[in-house]
Image (tube, rainbow, N blue to C red; front, side, top):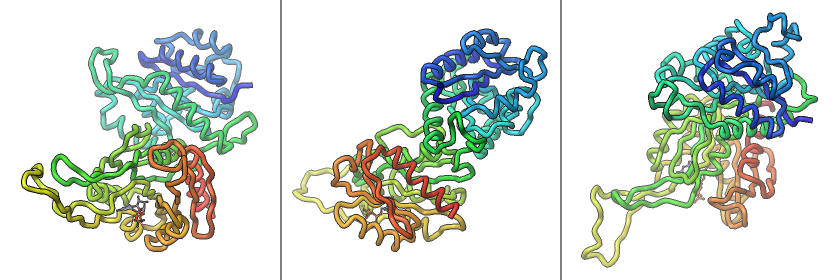
Amino acid sequence: MAKYRVGLGVSGGIAAYKAVEVMRALQKSGCDVSVAMTRHATEFVQPLTFRALTDKHVIVDDYDPQNPDPIAHINFSQNIDLLLIVPATANIIAKFANGVADDFLSSTYLATTAPVMIAPAMNTTMWDQAATQRNVERLRKDGVHFVLPVEGELACKTVGTGKLEDVENICRQAMALLATCDERGETGEDQSSSNVCDLKGEHFLITVGGTREAIDPVRFISNHSSGKMGFAVAEAAAARGANVTVVAGVTTVDPPANVKVVQGISAEEMHDAVMNELSKASVFIGAAAVADYAPANAADAKIKKEGRDSMTLELKKTPDILADVSRHRHDGLLVIGFAAETNDVIGYARSKMEKKGLDIVVANDITKAGAGFNTDTNIATIILRGGQKEMPLMSKRELADRILDEVVRARTS
Ligand code: CTP
């Protein structure tokens, strides 16, 4: 039996032929794929191609007398674990964003409760157009996931953003979303119709990575943070339907797709970036390793060693971003911090919770193997106002989901 059921929607762009490769890759990953096409898509690829490879009728028009199912848009939409649109034209994005249901694919979007992932492909000007960007933003807010187009040479021979993301990347992201929803019991043959991701409507603001505090134009004070934990939380939240903004310091890994990234390299810059974004947030997570002190007077020019046998650096305290967010919190904002400790982990973490007014603290003992900086795993205790939960050695991504489970619990309790 296939692991997941994917509804693959193909709209009318030159990249429609790549949907065939996506379909094959999904099948190889154990998915049962059903295909729906817009009428314009059939100008680029014949439905017969998909039919031969899926052994299923390819639906273009509900009302086509050849269509074996008289209420196809309902049956198709209710029997999938994911609706994946490859490629998505500006037109289909506009229809989805506005609830227009004038053909099979747009009706399916309105009729499905499955998570939706969209991989757009179009000319750069069409992609950059305010109307398209507005529609994308609106769909993101509605909980739709995007595999954003990349830069490259387009069919019209221009170079710019608008090229369909690589087939492998689209499949990887689709499979990751399916796996996340599966863990949460939201996919599978025996599912009910309620398979909507559970963080839809939330807006996460997450600080990630280490900060860099300038001594002079060439030197700085920093730390070993990689950004892996913060990005794992960002990725997991986006996969569960949240809108995610990350304020990133220095990181050694790439940010996940589907999140907005704002830079804040020094503690001061990170603080300002967070305060700028805060009013939109419903959940704040301080996952960054923010320097507690920065040079009091960074030199404008490179400091020379000539004539100096020693050097004293005066440091001043940086703004405590997490504490400031908590102090300025608006109604409904959940504030979550991290505590990386080497001793009396729970004691220090609980005192952070009190001092900074936090709802949840994720505490870890960084001396334990598998729990430090730059690893892909972590061992943690999630400290709640009314108790705590031990998280044994697990991937940072898995821990991210356990933290997000507590966000969901906090909202429903
Ligand atoms: N944090 C912050 N801004 C700072 C310092 C820390 O937002 N200037 C956040 C971190 O992102 C993390 C939590 O606060 O969520 C860590 O708490 P903190 O008490 O600052 O930890 P340490 O820096 O380890 O401090 P201490 O030496 O007091 O243990």
